[in-house]
Every structure is written in structure tokens, then in C-alpha cells.
Image (cartoon, rainbow, N blue to C red; front, side, top):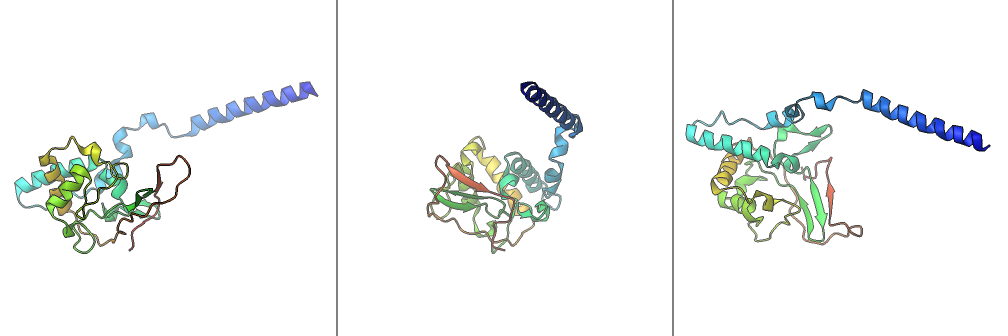
Length: 203
């Protein structure tokens, strides 16, 4: 009986190793693909600034476009659809909901829509959020919810360029729930609960 169990265990180990090696053999060879390929869809989704007539403002907006892509705005401010991010609603928000003892936040609509986006805010309002996480009503969004502390290396010119770019985006009407400051119960040891994969916007 012991001999049988040993043989069975050895067979199981061999099958596991063979299965794992077969898995490694059949997965896509990621190291053969240029890193730029992985982010190509999101990079091309960022609307270009060719439509800005003034060359100086266009150059500033192009700088803002580069910054907005590189600091990760798209990662949180996307709008999710059934098959992943809806690239037709670039930076219209609603793609991430974060809950914590400080409340509930849904990523904002950064397009210049008058009813639901940044057209309601002044340039200084937007720059203040980038600089310190302080919203127009005076509350400060937790830096773990929006990593504004990571943007401390941005200069005022950088912030201005980002705002110019955001103002140049096609406006998308997409209402986002206002932050709720009611604490949310979380499992022991959890700091935040992060939810994605769906659109947490209102419409």
C-alpha cells in the first residue's frame, strides 16, 4: 500500500510539473512584445490636440496630454464598458469606486462638460486638487484615494498644461455621484475597498 501511495504521489508531482511546463510553453511570449504595444490602445485613445488653432496653446496642450497619460489619469478616470474601458468616453470618470472610513469616492468626470464635468470648475480649482487634493468645497480627498501627493514634482506650468489639455477634450455628459463622507465598514486590517470593472457613474 505504501509503495502504491508513493508511486501515486510521484505520478501526481510529475503530472503537475509537466502541466506547468505546458502552461508556460503555451502562454503568449510577453518578453517578445515591445512594452509600448501593451499600452497602445490607451495611448491612442487620448484625443490629440491638432484642433487647437493657436500654436502656443496647442504646444501647451500637447505637454498636458503627455503628462495626463504618464501620471496615470486614465487608470482611474476611465469609464468602464462591457468589454473594458469605453475609449469613446475618454476621462469621463466613473470607472473606480473607493470606500473607506473616510467615505466613498467615485472617480470624477474630467471632460469639459458643462453639466457634469470640469466646465463647472475654474482652472485654479483643478490646479488646487492636483496640488493638494483640496476640492472647491474645502474637503481634502485622501491621498490614498487620489494620489495627489505623487504629483508634488509637477511644476505650476505642468499643472497649467494639464488643465489646458483637459479643457480641449471632447465634452462627455456623464454624471458622477458626489463624495459621501459616511464611514464604510471594511474587513479587519483593510484600509480601503477598491471597486472597478463597471461604470459607477449615474448615467
